Image 1 (cartoon, rainbow, N blue to C red):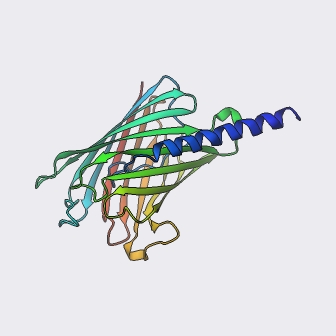
Image 2: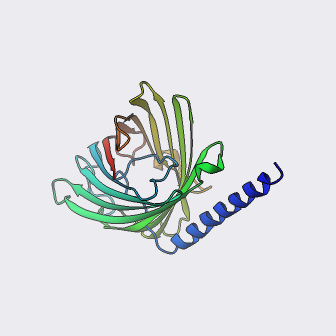
Image 3: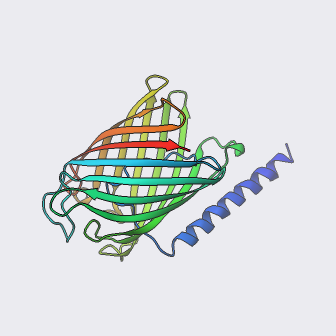
Length: 267
């Protein structure tokens, strides 16, 4: 037992150093995850070493903005198609690449931008009581689709499964480096998921996505973004990932109704 404790401490310190180094490296240039292009609460697991996951995120705004807002195109009846390619380099490190696209009338069909997302996770061999990982996401996107065209996202991920119940917390921080929010510091954008295995292949649950404003200096509720999705996960084959949901926005700045679908394949 005496020999095990120092080993656990050493591994924990090593992991925290990796998180710190990753954060410092990726803070130098950045980009915010495009709103309603990738609607997903992350689990803590990374893609297996040597394997690649290809995902298509399809999100359709059933009821969104109908006028230009601060130079940005309306979101009503626009389909967002995002291609995500993630490769596992080690059992605890992966890198994801995103290609954002919009399809809509009135000149709203376009390539929007791209992101890169490195992520590290606590290895399962450490036997922590919860799954833990952290990702950083950055890149570029066009000003017609996002007022802040250069931002950083730091996403801690903590999840746990108790028999049929699954919970994941993503207390995300976002920072603008180019755009109207450049002087606001970090914005708090919490994402939460809870699901229950109805059968071996089907899980039903709720997914919450929010943006409350600068950390410790939150906006009034009416100026915040709060969306709740009724979602399902289908586990029909270990090679495939399927998630679908319908969401509702509770505040004036949030799109009122969005349908989403995620289809992923491991190679």
